Length: 157
Image (tube, rainbow, N blue to C red; front, top):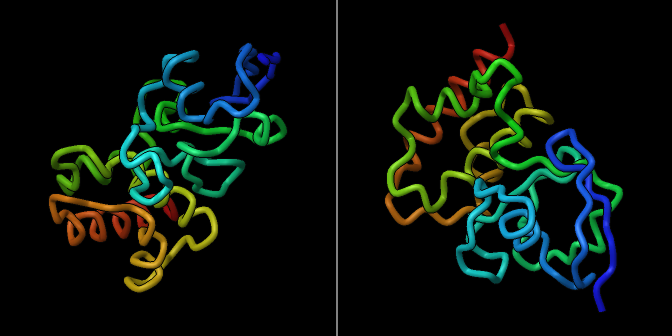
């Protein structure tokens, strides 16, 4: 049975009418037209559907929409600044050419933003730990590591 939910997505209140068990990913993509989070495995194991719930990176493909009504939900689109410029993490991924096929990009960027919120100057192992839930099939790990370090440096200045 469908119900109405008001979600706080990318700084805006958005109302949808869906079954409470509908995964957040489906609502974001199908009802709100936000295509930053991707459908990957559908099992919360690849990270391509990652969003920020408040400041925590969380997979959205199995997360019921009824469970996130009180959270601030941020998607990849929500990281872009009001003037259209990219978030420092997004810009660093572009600068370091850390995007290849794009399958993992959303998960890496969202995980990196969450990481830098908690650890503004992470070491290599902390970055690797933050990315453990993101499956990359192209092997851009070293470039992603460089991008996250670059973003950390740009965000502290």
